[in-house]
Length: 99
Picture 1 (tube, rainbow, N blue to C red):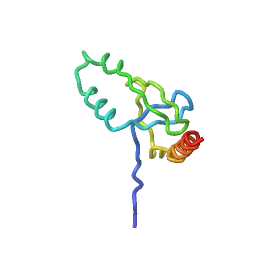
Picture 2 (picture 1 turned 135 degrees about the vertical axis):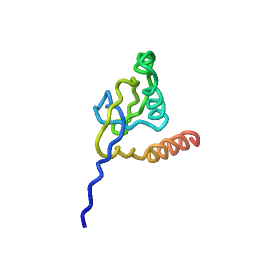
Picture 3 (picture 1 turned 60 degrees about the vertical axis):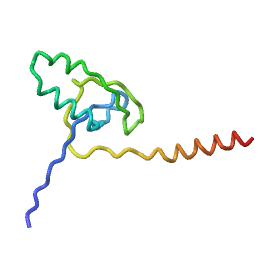
Picture 4 (picture 1 turned 120 degrees about the vertical axis):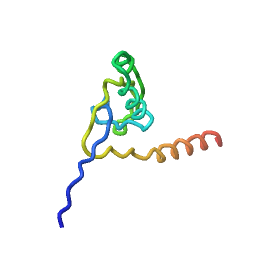
């Protein structure tokens, strides 16, 4: 049996802090696709678009331009769970409120 490996890729930006790839959310991908299809008269407007993303590796949020978008090979990194931190913060607040 011969199985061909399917090369996966995704659109994203490189984190300005740790240089790890950040996958784009669907809303940014849709907007990027729509604006790329417009005439060259509006190309400057497309490059000037700015959006903020949070890195899944270092958890820092930075602003990125549409011109920073590129293609990455492989699968996007899975976001680490923040529920542990949320649970710790709630227990600290509860203890502070109770004395």
